Image (cartoon, rainbow over all chains, first blue to last red; front, side):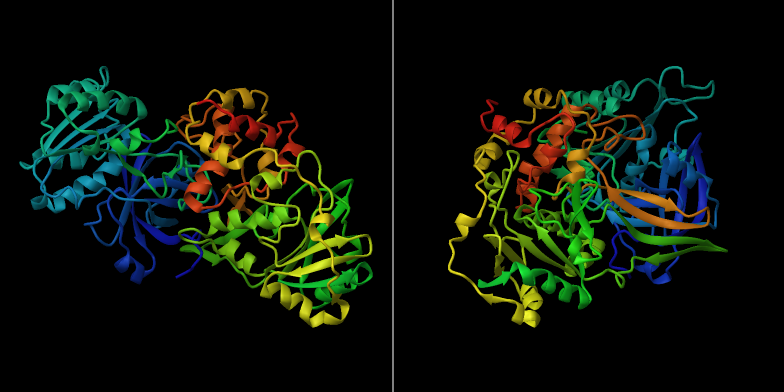
Length: 278
Length: 339
């Protein structure tokens, strides 16, 4: 294995899932058989994904570490690299560097209830934790998931939402923004913070994991306050722009904390100690 | 520390022998009125009269652009060719001032912490620093305010100090330095009995760096950043001439559609695109936030995380700035900051 931290592993796209307009999931298998067997990561970590000829883009690993033999990433086609990644087909080769960053402290959460609150394209970093928890279901108490998107079409992982919905050991609430519903829509209509308030989850022995656009996070935190969640029991991920992923290129810091090394996972208590630079 | 003396008449002979021995010489060369570090073809091209070169010497270990690996599309996949250190030349950096030699410490701090960085590390292993004490300075120099001095040997393998106009005191600091002098011992003479301090430029202490760093600890929300950066163009020149700035971009350099290189190149926290998210969100959306990042990174974050300051007082940023922002004046303002 190379000691050059910038050299990606080669991976082959095993499966592409079109999740929503402009959003797809790639299932990636390491070309190196030994690496495919030995590769390990933990929930919350991220990587740098290469479209050779265009460059690298940063996403979380969206699959669970409990699912061995592959990794998945989910991204929205937005810029040059993501557009190039979206043009790749099953069987084609791309690059991956990682895993980087810290992790959700699942070990510390054993025996606790988990409340997931996600908006839009921010479900992928949480999906990794959700499956990790569900695959080790006995370690946790109640598992509740609130997921919202602008429109019904924008909801990602539709098959998995159905699966979670059908599981007796998961409470799933989905919502779309007002005007985003279809005639067949059976979920909630409303913004995530309002729906959360209506859900009224208990804060007792519960960890809240919140991922979403900044505006959703901004209005969700006060609701969690009202529900009695202490800042130490609320977790989120930061997604500052990165290039190297390993604490050198100088982009992703928030104060003296590097999102790539000290994050991307932060508790709300940790966020409150950081300057507003994210 | 071992001391010798080399007459001016022998200096070029020594460098020529070093060069003939297979090492490249990277030294100040004046071209078009601008003095910058270059790989010299002939030691006669070396310029030694400048106060400060336009560019620092950092490019010897952290080139402005550098290939990280190559890729080639092939039937059924992609082939990668890893970074190759075989062709990195052994290089003697000659004639850099103590501020530039000292700057390899913060660079090594950034590239070396945690995972290490092969391209930087491989180059540093092949570098010998033969520095030259400053016998003159200008009003923008402030090495003495950031724990340096015009005659500091910190970071150097050899330090030369001009003794009159006829020769140099030679301080051999490291084994790497000794390896450069011992084979050519005949060119060196016994060190003269001189007071080195008297041979050096006088760089006034402009501010108390301890007071500045204490002040910065609570300065994030201060209005001072807006005041100081109101005229900043965001051109990034300060970062490009800085011997200790290490921020970089990673880019693709395609050679046609079937192959190319992944490269890294110098970047600057002063650029508005530096932290811009694809979504349009930018955590440092205005110049005052970027100026704050520049100063806090160097004088607060790096000391805290890497135990090394990101500034050696060379003054290049102030010389290069098109709107005359003077770093030591701005730091002096911070010294007296009322948070």
